[in-house]
Image (tube, rainbow, N blue to C red; front, side, top):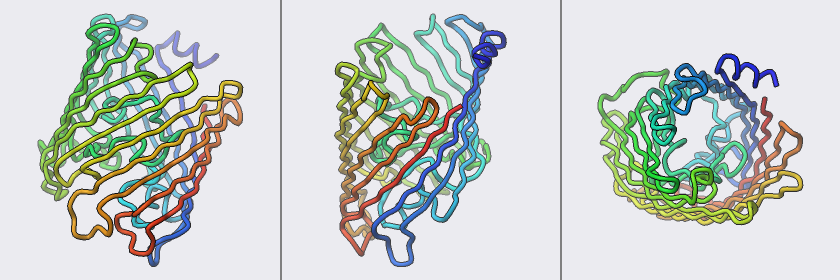
Length: 349
């Protein structure tokens, strides 16, 4: 109630959460670890400074993280311990203080159009389906996102979007291809090496965009000299649909050229189930991916299966156990099958 009053009187809204994660695996490479744990404190503020209360409002947005490991490796680094190409866990690293968002968000055309400029994560806008929430749903990057895309990180850039009507929309943007949450706000350190994307989508209505959506993404990334990463490009096609506000099947397929993406081909199928009587959510998904050509790979393809159960333990507390099955990890010379079991806790305020 107090936060609502601050927003009404001053146009400032804020929220935060503290998240914990533990992850273990049944096998590791020689000298590797089979368990890790980490915590993340995230604070978000949005200050409506222009046309407050109007559909053409403008806001300053800031998101700050502090990511810290309790023991090494952090869950975000576990993939390297088991020879898996990708990330078995996303946010839970040991990267310390990070500025995720520092941008201006402007609505135009009575809210049907808008743009964002500054520092932001393009993955919060492009190629989004309703099940993407690595804090409390799937945690493996290959299932949360399409890793046939040379996925960018928080970076300086500009993006824009427009609804043509209540169903069709388009968005796109350009970002620093070398940006990351750990770059200490460096501005285009590698020069004009850019990540560009365009996305067109359809939904039965604006309000259902995240729950019923079909879209096509095309993207291109420049060669990055300092990172020794080749130029790459590709497309991603994705869809999800929610039935009776309970079941949500989803599917993705992406294809790319170049060695910058994790996969050159990737396909994902999955299903989300909501339990309304206690606000729980459960999910199961499988991903198959073809790695870019590289003589060091033990296997040219990887298969990932993940299941989670988001337990709404209390109003502001979620407990999320999950299990992953990793088939043919690309750098694992010891085992073709690795199991990973983990749990997250999310306390919001």
